[in-house]
Length: 297
Image (cartoon, rainbow, N blue to C red; front, side, top):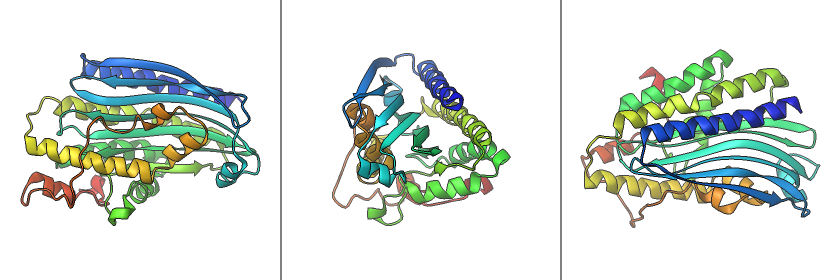
């Protein structure tokens, strides 16, 4: 129980840190906060969460959410989690940030702790979805996460998991962004070790991303830049609604629907057989939506 309480407070701390950082980068930002509650599968009180929706001149739309849920779940869903006990306890933070300027990447991260029956595990990660080929930004992002992972010797495996997970497989091998790290069902058998690792990874969330916002938010951009951004946001929507396990978990555990779907961008585009202009930076950017060893480049 002590470890659970510690992680509940950790995700709330990261939530507050990130909100403060976004306010610093975008003083125009407006915040809409909702504290929600849920019933479990049996109709009993089952926890809830705090959803913080943000929008402004720099940050077009973002969600920084924490939740703490518990209680009964559908027995069939419990089996999918690998548990014979139809109960779950889970806490975590999830954030998605869609900046207005196409030169600023979108960003997603989440960290969670889950228990079902006797099984307890961690999951989460962070990934970047850029729309302009600023390779130095990609190297910066991956190096931050490599530095955080290296004491635990997990960067290579977590990067590979990310490269394999955030893929629109209905579009071949096209990733939704340029990756990061991803892990799920993490339990080494040493709770203290795992808690320390995941806590330190969660502390990397803010410094891995906000410097990129600060660096690019005032850059001039073109209509073509924005058009490419909106089409890539469309691919982001495809992934979240077709493939994302977090979306499924939230909906199947009775989470707040708007809080789950806050990951979707405020604006996006779909064009039949869309292709970026030949020879453009956007055509070049398409080459980067495949696994690359950014820390070695």
